[in-house]
Image 1 (cartoon, rainbow, N blue to C red):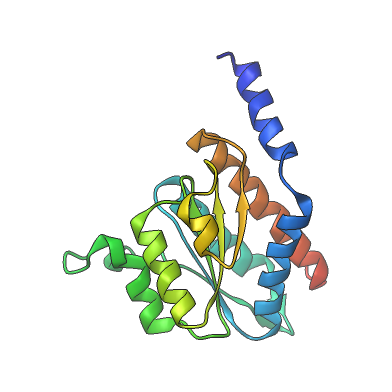
Image 2: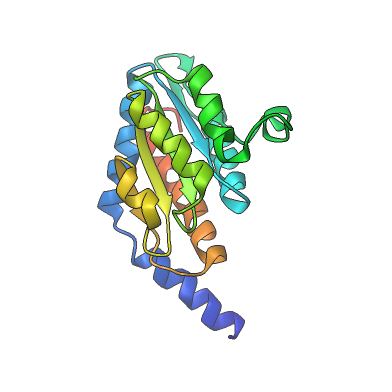
Length: 183
């Protein structure tokens, strides 16, 4: 595959996105911010990097009612992530168990939608009354049916899915900044 055809494939995946679904997900985030809740994000590999990017960029850019909105990446605490006493399938769930409230929101990034630790986090969040959004690809996997809301990238390429998720992150942050008059 040539570089040009790869670029065209990325462009097609972006163009196939439903702006209304992305805006609905952004609206859920805005509702959480306005309600005083915390927005958590998690993922594995490149999706974990996207979770970190989202939380870091959102924390710097968005302020609600004069106070910083709360965004936490469940990937950011390396002591927790690398702890030998944690079962990696529960690494995100266990963090939510000690921090999450029903006013909060969990955003789970997963290229396949089938990562066991992501599904464990979604399972706990739903039981705790935490709203959930799944950003995925490859048809959505289990995450698309288990999350309260999903945004699926129409691709089977992990690199493409993660890249489109990054585009979505920046679009959502810009939208939130405009809605909160802080951009």
